[in-house]
Image (tube, rainbow, N blue to C red):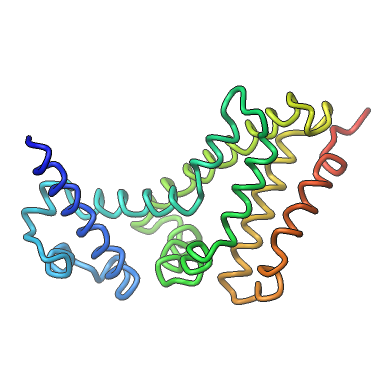
Length: 214
């Protein structure tokens, strides 16, 4: 396929996903049809089927991309990389990303509410596969945080007897708590001082997450 055609195909795929995201936020997943997505994207149903097997695959691709983007996995992968000279600094960068305007806007959006409904919905409903997908991304996030913490121990940035699993869970719980405060509209006093809050958490994690001695 010529380069131009590949680029056009990618732009069409992006238009489809953008339309699906908009309609899911407005109407919900169940009330959004492929025909409606095609109309909103200005494409044919055939164009959707060229990129996605069915609505389930389209939905999975959309939510996977949204979660990966706003979990800032690239920063975590860099923090966890072997030989990373400043893993704790990269963890700090990852945490601070969640206070940027793009993150705050997403956390306050209808799309984020749709994601929340999937994660905390009825485990027996038809969104079970999506829920599992999102939880797998969350588990991957935790593994990367743990790997970055292990790198910080090796780099001498954290104590040798750090309980890295506990420390990683503390980091994830901290950022989930902050994100939920933003979603609920309770973070107006936290966000302006979020950098100081992050620095305080990182400064003390080494003292609260050390391995208990027998």
